[in-house]
Image (cartoon, rainbow, N blue to C red; front, side):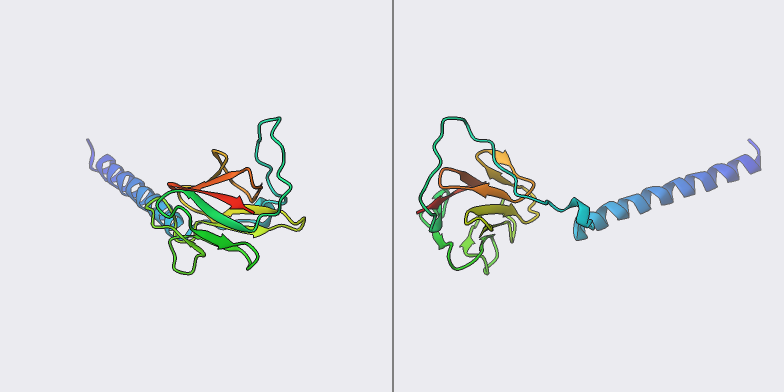
Amino acid sequence: MSELVVTLLKVLFLALLWVFILSAASVIRTDLFGRTVQASELPQQLEQPHRPRGRRRAKQTPRAVEVTNGNKQGLRADLFSGPVLIGRSSDCAILLDDDYVSTRHARIDADSSGGYYVEDLGSTNGTYVNGQRITAPTTITLVDSVRIGRTVLKLVS
């Protein structure tokens, strides 16, 4: 092989190595800091969970969120005092000590029609309503169950 071909292969290998390093750095940066969300990507309206037919809709007004299954079973947070933050952080109304729960995992808040919705706050493991992972704020009622990590929560009157 000529000296020119060997030099070109070295330069090509070096360029390929830099492309790999820069793409790995980009992936790491995205994992650490997230990505920019455009306004057009934001949810416009609440997502309605799929419910089996024949189920009656509850007519009572929810007063609190209660942990119905998990290591904090029986823990309640009042809905009338504002949004209920759920997570591992000390500023959350429902503090969950679970490896599958993010620092600020989800929020339950009142919507404009007087009902309530749950919103995932960008958690790693997701928030589930009636067994389905949600990707947008989702309306919940007294009959719906919300699973965060290993913990199940429900609205109670």
